[in-house]
Length: 142
Ligand code: HEM
Image (cartoon, rainbow, N blue to C red; front, side, top):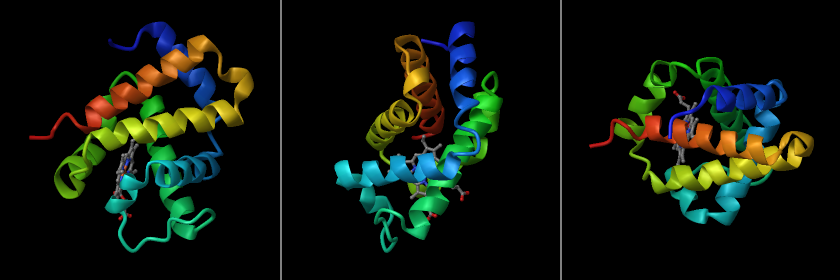
């Protein structure tokens, strides 16, 4: 289901409160993902995935900042994500199932850090947004 105008408004409203916290929120989401869905660790051999590690913070910041950029280009996600599409599909070959797992942890982190904004309507729009990003990131798989 494509994002409606209302979805885009909801996602932007929530993301205004993510801006500036990309590193903290991203590190938290990755830590939960690696701990709870440990098969996701296999894509990061040799990296320190413990809570508070420098890698979790730097990578968390990259992932959440990519989402901040995607929100800023929500009407043209394919162009905004094109470099990441190629990287995840061709270099990394991340199994699409892992995106579903990470998306879930990103939603959980938003719910915990921004409870007052995590209304049912915003939850639904954020879920649709993350799903749309995932569809984009796996669109070049073959
Ligand atoms: C790298 C974003 C999902 C595995 C990256 C980078 C970004 C990013 C911005 C850095 C790219 C660069 O340095 O050029 C995202 C976003 C995701 C997502 C927005 C979905 C919301 C995933 C998932 C996995 C994954 C689900 C696997 C479980 C990786 C790996 C790297 C990477 C292994 C390279 C890390 C390194 O060696 O430093 N991703 N990613 N990504 N991503 Fe993702």
